[in-house]
Image 1 (cartoon, rainbow, N blue to C red):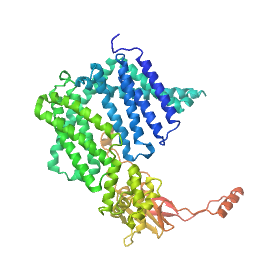
Image 2: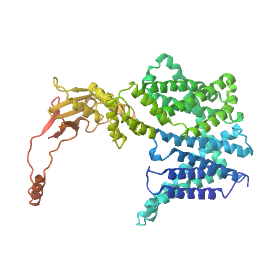
Image 3: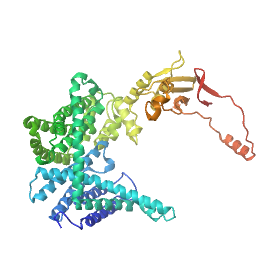
Image 4: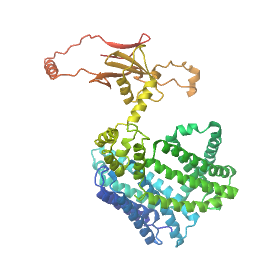
Length: 586
């Protein structure tokens, strides 16, 4: 039996997973809920990290090192979560702190594994890189195994349920059972796969090979994109600043992963086929330009709307992308064809840096909520944004405790407009209870530009445009026509529903599945949306006659007496071009 082989490992890891799943259930209780206490959240985090890190790092040789590392890092994770406070008090952006913690753990694990293999504080790049790829493959494969286990369990449960044996079905619906089953399945799969190292390495090679083959494809696309920018200009990028930064960052991450799939973890594993080799070099060359574009995009966004926790996290990611892009570009310029030999040690240094930064950002040492709150308050109090333009919803619900404290302070502001608006927002129980005045103004302007009356000479009531905007009709590129059927009623039609159909495809054109398919029918598209004026406000939907208590008594008596009849009543119907459209209405 080799040193890496350990027949008891599947049983040990399966038992650890089973115990972890059951203990987590005892900590968080039954059901799905977000109102965990600080103790519950930190304890559950510690248990999961301890079990997971033990499973990925445990070896028969120096097994106590793995246990000490797993328990130590789990304790750090639990303390970080406890330091962050109650999860229900977190802001929208603070979920990134947990992601940052998990990233730090994911980077620390292969560093520890490499040092353990060396028996000292040495981190050979080949070993670190190999453990990192292996851990990723194991993580994905174990979750696939968990999904298969649950699929089989439910199949058997439903099978036995057919013959009125519902014990297994009821068991799978119990929280303690399925949580324990997840831990057991994941742990057992991890143990089995680690005992069959050859299978894991084969999967690792297959994944690396597939990613390496994709490197030239992405390289060509990204290089052409960068070269096209001087021709097309950057205006389109800046106009789409809300989506520019994440798209560019995903491109940088993709380039980083595919380039490393080509260069491997050692010179003898580097793929030297010219297409793959130059593809990786192309990816290394474009990472920094893409990261710089992302930095400019997020900078413009911040200049327009100020800091928010999400934008500050984006700044962190962009900074890391720029750092990584600069390292790869320097390695490429200095090393040229032998650039991989220079970039590997840089990867190791950057891994330590990312681990440290991620761990710090997982703690409240750097409060993006406080930074964002100060910046937004300065913009409001300086008059850079008006109380109507200010994002009160974010201040009350997205900036955590600093935002709520600032809102309380604004309730005593000397500015009457700010004070009134702050008092209104403070009464909101949910973020959607706070109306976004700037969004309403934008949507009203958009609806007014996209909407026209179908009756020349008649003006559309202002309240009707507001109601149309609330239902998201006639926004973006969707043009609409409005038919006022009375002073208190209107029908809104979408122009695209009345587009002239194209020529019908000939039988020969569609034979054998070739040629264009006929257009899809949009059922109910031409019926229009009905709006009515009720209590001084336009509302969408039918306006049925309200049944009084006397009506209900009469209906009950008539039904008991079998006084049911059919009467002919006049109908109202929309005609377009002399052709009836939609359903009759009252």
